[in-house]
Length: 404
Image (cartoon, rainbow, N blue to C red; front, side, top):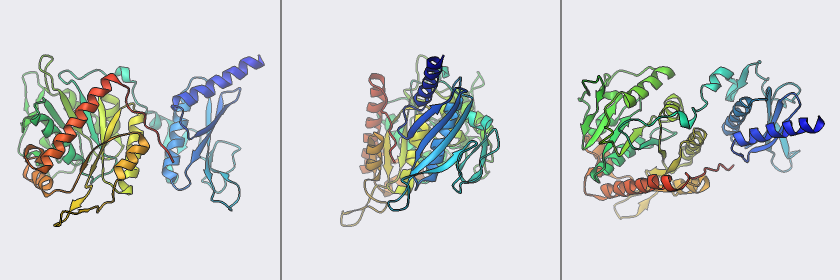
């Protein structure tokens, strides 16, 4: 009997580790005979947000394993030399754990989130990704590529538009879906602000043709000056309707690729796409400075958690070339390469500040369609993305490793 209970405890502890993908920040897992689990999670004392995200993720997955009745966790952090013990509990959750000036534990059925906000178990469970096998292919679309950024203002839409235009220029059948519900800018960047999609006999939206691409945007369906004050369920419904209730292609003549321009961040829209859309892969757009790269790591973590392969990073505003031809790294140098190396992800393109890119976006004529240096950059990006997508068929997606 004793040996049987011990094997059960070990099996449950192993299941928790497996559910978290063998995360190296999970220092230890113990489970007692009643199914109560205690997780010890290593935290970076200088990054409380990441530590709290780890704890929430660990408790969430552990709590869903059959046989686990209660989950408690302790965050530990290294102290600076000469300041006492090297390991101190950063937070403690559950009865009998030391507080060490941490906030009071949440009430039963609630879990703490950074800065005292609380999230119910029911709310947390809504963020659990749907099983990959439950996602059916979208008829008329061969591949779906998400262009994402965990931070706004990094040029994500510019990359999405010019990547799509470059692929169309190369002869591919391309669709472009503007899923940036709160700030749809693709109609402006394509010169299609006044366009309205038609409705087919089958009562489906007919995408707007623009520069050889099939495009849809919430901007085609709303007043350009009206704010989009939508909550999560409406956002999810709008995105899935734009995707599924449109005539993107046919079984006989499908799109080679649909590129989805997502809103910045890791919220409702991103989760809706990851959970409800059979995404082939994602790329993450960033600028070189650390304030943006920190968000890249969070975005990559979201895609890893929702089982969407990230094929690489795209760095924008990489440098500015002055009148002497010298490169000026106004935003920092090599940030994406450093972060990509840490995450095991390639940098698909480094895009400098070029006036032609900005002018093309304002004029509704993407720079990728021209013949200058900007067009060459985006054609190389399109080639790198196409190669990376092809490689997904023959080898596993890159494993993303997060290091403190």
